[in-house]
Length: 278
Image 1 (cartoon, rainbow, N blue to C red):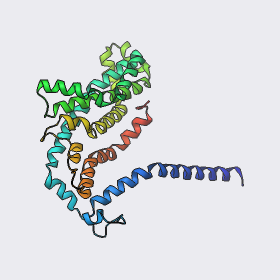
Image 2: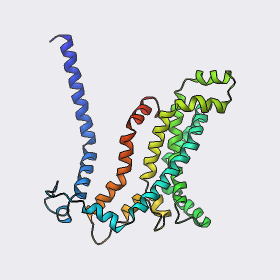
Image 3: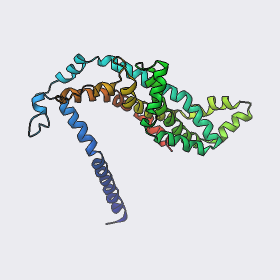
Image 4: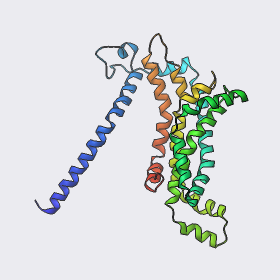
């Protein structure tokens, strides 16, 4: 076997080993996702059968219809859009300039503080925030949920943008400053357009974190201001578990994130490869 043949065989073996490793790592997630889809498309008699029925002989969409009939899911969806959209937008407006300033000032200690705030559990400041919003009379509206979600999304955006702006060449901004541009003009006309992939990555990660957050919506929301994860939780009862509608509701919650990720997956890959996540 000559050198070229050995190289080709080694390349094929490496690809097969990589594919098997990825399959092993993704198998639990894919199995859970497949089982959730199976539950949502089966009747209750199949969902409670033993041995388990992995795929129904007759597919039904009755569980999805029951989700929308028994709960105002469109209202909860609109609440989630308001909360997640405002939290993500505010995080981008505040986080992108903050990441730029921290990166240019090389304030690594401040970046570590931001990372520490991101790692702090939300339950640690849940009671003080609840007390504050209760005094202000905001409990039961979507605004306290949006404000608390910004506590989650802002450190994500700032941390990503710090790593991204640190990888940009400083010569471009220095050339703009020499030509008479101010610091803000150099940021807006030079650094910001180059940071578009990083902004996209920060936005999608902030969106996913806010959309999937449960604890703040469960505490601060009222009956008509619940978000999608809280709506799924409220479908649980102590008497019995309706696995079909519950799985259907979970899929409805996941669907916007999945669609958004598929639509802008090229932007995400470009941002990750360009240094959006350090």
